[in-house]
Image 1 (cartoon, rainbow, N blue to C red):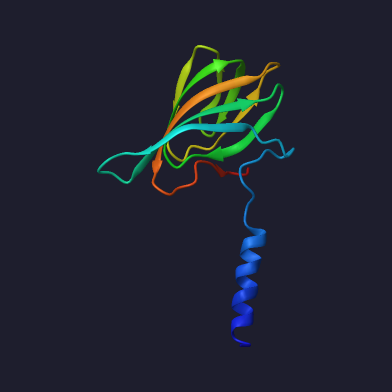
Image 2 (image 1 turned 90 degrees about the vertical axis):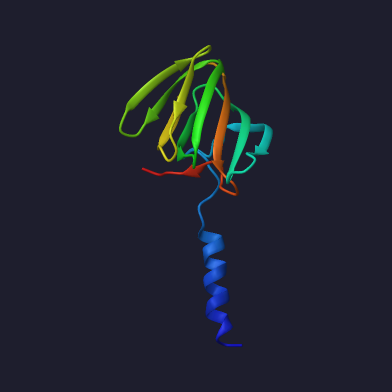
Length: 133
């Protein structure tokens, strides 16, 4: 019984100290609504169609996705800050692509932003993972 105590304490510590779900430093979390999700037949991938809504003048903290993101801006303007590439300004009517594992954040403009995104990720993977500075 005493041997199990350190293991239980370690497991509890990992649970309590694990990173929180994707959130900005100011505790702002963009709203992401999954519209559809399906496994790709004959592969180890899942495709997710989602709408992300970012409130005016908010910052979505730096994060990564485990697969490719192909997106279309439905509403608003903002800047994607992409590690190794700098800023990419986007506005309604534009589309863009981010490769798997690319660290990025989103600085929204003065109006709400809506992004329609298609993610192709490995089955069972988290859609977004925090990537602190």
